[in-house]
Length: 140
Ligand code: UDP
Ligand code: MG
Image (cartoon, rainbow, N blue to C red; front, side):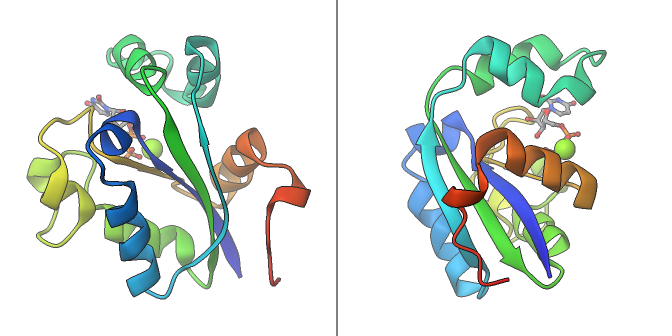
């Protein structure tokens, strides 16, 4: 049993795609065990993306991620980290397969609708960044 963090980024919320992302999780039989809307401060966005602090896109990315509300979710299930990454598609929408969220909706490498944890360690840290145990409706 795994958990992962999903974020509908500010562009996804702004464009009215939060419901579309949730629908795709539900259709894939992925269990959503926590969900809320939050607005990150710039400082919080810089902490969340600290692994990327040396990258050229860091300042722009963190400004974008703090530019409006996001919908954060905890997903739970077998192999859910990988399953979510498959539903998301490649970071660059131009490389994403048809039928993935990023292929179908993103038109910008930065504003690419969704975030998903990339492994068990980052998933645990990212979930704890947004949720405490009482906020997660786990069956596990
Ligand atoms: N990003 C960007 N330019 C790049 C690479 C990434 O703006 O060349 C942004 C994009 O929003 C991406 C986020 O930084 O989703 C985190 O990058 P990562 O490589 O972790 O991609 P992800 O895990 O989101 O697919
Ligand atoms: Mg990543």
